[in-house]
Length: 267
Image (cartoon, rainbow, N blue to C red; front, side, top):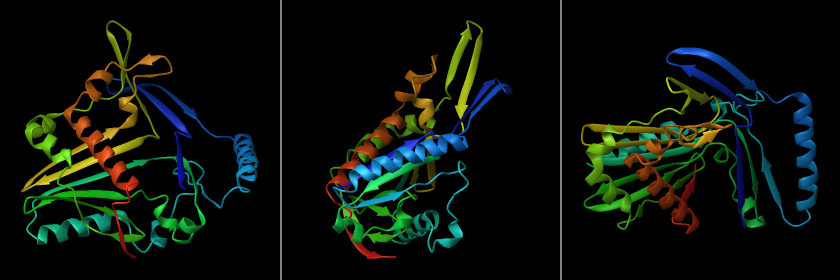
């Protein structure tokens, strides 16, 4: 049985902007003492669960503890694998392609593996989230998973409602504007708020020579933060492009749950 948890915003810097001028800055950092306490809590937790199952634990911090992964040590990187796969599809005269990725900057992941899962687990695949590609080929709707560790099969999914939702709303989605977290201090004062560690959902759709890209920062989808109400919340969550991303997330989650992506071979 697999359990995976990601803790994000481990270190958060908040920037408050009024127009183009920064008016204040706060940075919350993890002190050495805090790290020691966190490590102590993890130790006792691990001691409790290791008697029940095999544990595989991996921590990663981006721009947080200075332990960012060195990409030069990885034989493959996701960006190149995705680019090469898209070129492969285009060489097959496929001109309707969607690339979707979701990741968090800064965080901790803990994963528990059964003995059978531990045997086939790839370390590099853990901090590097896979990317998913959807396309239409000769009228059939297909998808696959791009991973650093393994090559996966192409799967037919003609019931995928993503394309059914996208095409009728294509023009609207192209014009969708994702607005930054904003709040009012007074009737005439509006401030924008952003953080330096957040989760991202990126969508890139290529149809013929046209490319549409949408990038969602999860913080802009928050309703409030520390008592500050996001006046752009309703606008952002009701965008058609947000609906597209929600459909893709659900499709991927169900495919992973049902083990749709079959590994062809390790890289």
